[in-house]
Image 1 (cartoon, one colour):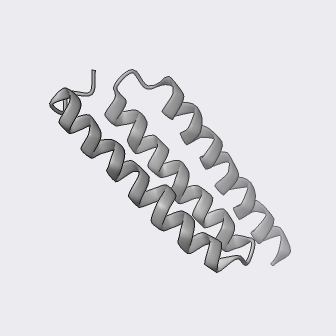
Image 2 (cartoon, helix red, strand yellow):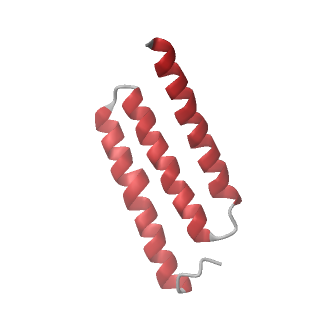
Image 3 (cartoon, helix red, strand yellow):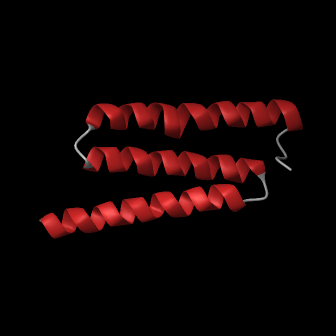
Length: 84
């Protein structure tokens, strides 16, 4: 069971790193914001695996939902939604 948890931890951290790198490399801002939200989802999953459910809920609410929502609304208002 311990090996399964370790493998899951490694996969979640790898997903977090990959989505963060993608967020930096995307040309379109909307794609970068979505990748940032995915990074927040992976961070929330990692906190859940580390037995910190209160922090995981906070990260899911703020890092995966609220922050990307604010960025998307701002992009729509500033650039008309094209994200270039």
